[in-house]
Image (cartoon, rainbow, N blue to C red; front, side):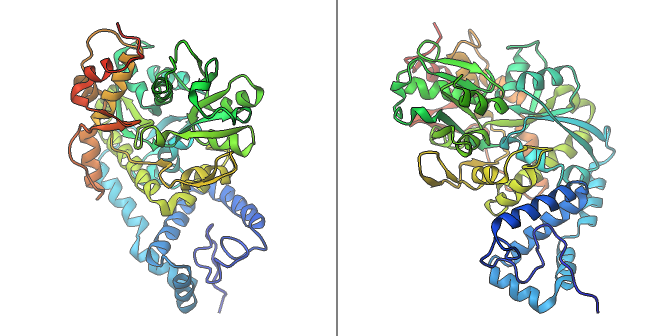
Length: 465
């Protein structure tokens, strides 16, 4: 009788894995394990369907048998082939794909170009590619790694990309014609919440009080970014005027660590994995996580133009379902190590897997000699709350990016597709929240979206008249 072979990337069907030598139990040490994992992942990247199946089978096996001892007992009892057949029966990939195709109706545009920046914020829209979520919706997606946010904006305006990874303030600014010609954009989902940090150069370990930062040079990825608005908020709450007491310069995320190393900047409020990469490279330390400024803040978004939505309703629906499916998988803490493995390779983030895993699991070195455990450091709640847009608009007004009266509610509801998000979440069997406008607390101060102007006027440091 031929030997049953487990060929999955995670050794899902190996009854002897999870020993003491490495995380799967098959190798002499963790280094050998990581080397084989990288080799297998590169091979799997050439076969998106097989990679998708591997991840699904591993996830189902862990859900059925949460304890390693339970998994080993089951696999020893039934063998590889019986276990694989059982999981295939519980999770019929082919049938699900056929159902998705039928539900889609006629896809108006199957071949799509989606832009993204190589940061962990983009995890859902990135992982939807190698895990086959786009393909299962009848879409042939080309993910286009893009150098910076201004280029993302321009490619969307020029219709070189069909949909894109955005900073959540970008579609709002683009729709209003702030910083570019006005083009109506729509936010389908929030890609991630939290997941950013203020990172300082290691030479500033003795300057943990922001009041010591006068004259510092900071980098943010774009003017119309949560990074810019959260950094300004944090500085102002600590008595510094962000336009007068420090310099804030726009720097593409992949260039932040190099600029920190070279001494061109003293710190940055930027996206991961670059905060963790600065620690990994021993050039920076994490001063504060953005979660500690505003727990649950939006960061990046997934969106497209209003024209695309109108001209391609079935394609739009298929995209929505694919990204929501990926977001649901990314939200589950049990999947974070798998997500890190999928998005770390050169085609996507091009970062050491250990760096990405530290970000996504929330167990990380902070560069100050500590290993911290913050499970919510990064999260992937996709709901595009209208109140998030109102807060963004309040900060655009506070810092002089927009003048005069602002139609907070009208702009929020013209840009954010909250109703559609709830519709497709329900269709996918995901939990659908109530309401549209939530109150938030940012550094202890309440934001009521119904009183946005009063909120703006309550700050001592601002650029409004």
